[in-house]
Image (cartoon, rainbow, N blue to C red; front, side):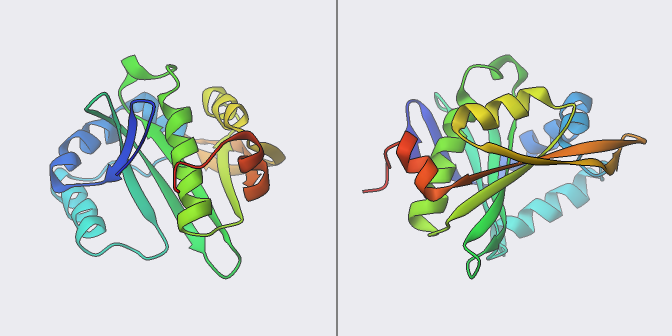
Length: 181
């Protein structure tokens, strides 16, 4: 478990899956994140159960806890230790807590984990062009917009631009101190 300013990242547990499933069916979250079509409750439980019992070594998934309450999740994906980089994704599923800095703090903790513990040199994010909230959060934490792939993906029946953000280890530590001593 890693904590900074009332935000904690901890490994996902089987009991967390039910809340994740409610977020899967939230249309606004689905539209902003680009999730695949929803699956049955049983298939969803099975998929996330496997992620807990047999984790992919190229992914690190944590839930976000704010003031003792599960509010979202964050993951490093496509971890390439040889290249020293990974993608990051985040969801704050509790709408009444969005916009309160919880996601930004979770990103800071996860980036510190990525750079200090996993020993990466670069973390990047892909954000849909219409997802302005996520773009602002990336920039607030210190990511740099590196480019836009125009009409890169089909999402919700339309071609969408994909904004690419990146942050390098030295850039992160110019702005933040580590919580991992």
